[in-house]
Image (cartoon, rainbow, N blue to C red; front, top):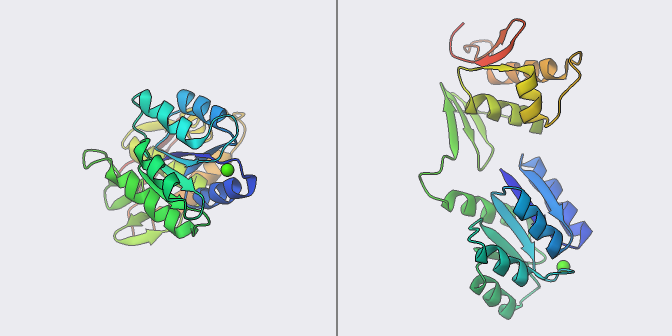
Length: 224
Ligand code: CA
């Protein structure tokens, strides 16, 4: 899940970015309205967190512009303390929700999850493979009902495998989609991460799910 934060207060922006990254979201930051609009044009976001008072273009102008382009990405607006007008104008301009600054990070997370879920039942929010489940909204990973703690990279790696089950994924495919970069073919970074992940998703008594295809890559499949 990709999130854009448009907020000119660097401290607030980096607090939100850091917190969301800890929850395994991928986060971009813009410090003004124009740059925010540019990023929205060139990237695909699942949600936008938008401050109102911004340089170049304010939050109201930004949301009006994206809604006029028929972009329905959920938007949470950040409003100043007790600015009722701000809330009303924000919602009238097409925001889905608002949060009054200063806010508790937990509240931002709760609202963000609610909006990501709201996109409708037809939108897939949980990936399943055998007894393994990966929730794309909460980023919880469970196997046989037990939660598994993963780092950001391990999570992205598992998400990629679960989106492509029973398919051999080469190191090049993995590095391009999970690291967004091509590694030098001598590096063993991928192998190291696969090993971490493999051990986390299969305890000794459980069936191995991540298999090595010698000389080719890896595959997520059931059984030996
Ligand atoms: Ca501001």
